[in-house]
Amino acid sequence: MDKLKILVVDDESRMRKLVKDYLVKNNYSVIEAENGEQAIDIFMGNRDISLIILDVMMPKLNGYEVAEEVRKLSDVPIIMLTAKTSEADELKGFELGVDEYISKPFSPKILVARVEAVLRRSMSDSGTDIISVKGIELNVSAHKVMIDGEEVELSYKEFELLNYFMTNQGVALSREKILNNVWNYDYFGDARTIDTHVKKLRSKLGAYGDYIKTIWGMGYKFEVV
Amino acid sequence: MDKLKILVVDDESRMRKLVKDYLVKNNYSVIEAENGEQAIDIFMGNRDISLIILDVMMPKLNGYEVAEEVRKLSDVPIIMLTAKTSEADELKGFELGVDEYISKPFSPKILVARVEAVLRRSMSDSGTDIISVKGIELNVSAHKVMIDGEEVELSYKEFELLNYFMTNQGVALSREKILNNVWNYDYFGDARTIDTHVKKLRSKLGAYGDYIKTIWGMGYKFEVV
DNA sequence: CAGTTTTATGTATAATTTGTGAAAAATAAA
DNA sequence: TTTATTTTTCACAAATTATACATAAAACTG
Image 1 (spheres, rainbow over the protein chains, first blue to last red):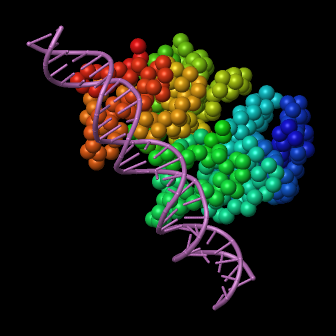
Image 2 (cartoon, protein in one colour):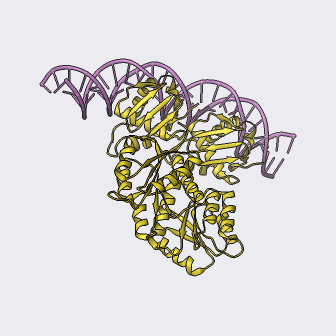
Image 3 (cartoon, rainbow over the protein chains, first blue to last red):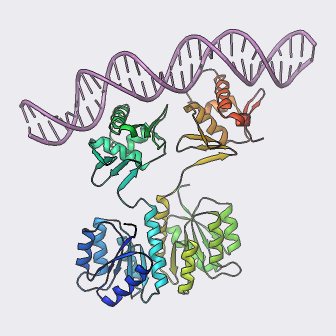
């Protein structure tokens, strides 16, 4: 589980093999799909795919259509393989959230360089929807929290608050800021309600409770030791 | 001060103007440089530049050489403008940390789309604000002070006061001025309370305590040696 | 140097802020 | 509807900080 998985989608098996060889040689794990539908199926059942390389020209679902579908599900990086360098196409791609273009023919070096560049970028900005700090694992999409492997029941607000704390690790957050981000903008109640939630969070986090630090006269901060 | 600054470097003034026009129309602020040396000078004196667009082909310092220099100073995003699509060059660029390529000729839309894509990526991971003087490191966003690597507990007012001192390094500050900036405007107590806070700050700063100098009959000043 | 003014410092007190448990209010579920 | 759950408010204790004050020390003035 240390090799990154790359999904290569192309109808020509020769081209798939070529790309696969280059990537495997550079220590990636490659999954192949020979058309758009299959690609989406595979992606659905394989959410740990780190990158998709899509040929533009394919029968039935073309590359853009696949990209569009994928974007409904995920922000996984997408590289387009294209023969034509039509500008209109390229623009369309950027609008769909395509990360990079490689035009055929290409060399192994270019392919690998771009793959690495795109992966580097996507790795650096959050990526998954699991925020994990020490023994606390917060699964944002599943709205679930595990502490030392055990699931802990948090209410909706408690979860949102913890999420806000953990995505702003090490940042001092004023009560006002917390209210504006975790509560709706139309909330005009007492800011002290935050204290009550912090109290409950702290107790539910057990030993990790004191990762939530009080900044006297200011607010709170989530910080590990 | 909300427009993002983009530095455009090209020896051809026609090309600079073209790029500038496109960007200005899209609400960016553009600074021009007509060669590599000038670009680096401008970048040095203008650290709030959000993006550099570099022509590859320039006399004296070429685009790659400029990129290399810039990377020694900063992680600011770089887009290369290139006529030739030589693969070796492109590879070289990626190794230097170039974020994107645009090959000439290009359309306004492509230019702006790529600029926005690159900026979006770089914005997401922009850092914290830390004021650091000698052994004192004041982390404003974390509301935390480190002295010789050790965290020191400061109260809210103490922190604000030190922050004010350090952002006004070398400037003589009257008690009145300090009150107006660190205390709320509705504070009408004794200005001597500043003395008490200064006393505590000095003792908490340990050996660095005498960076806070007394200006007799006037106020205080934060100054190194 | 004596006298005056200003600052340093230790301590006491006032004021503010937070923690907590329990009750009330609002929401969701049955 | 009743019942359960979550969210908010409230009150008071506990903790922390800000300020005032008294006195000592230092700096300036003539």
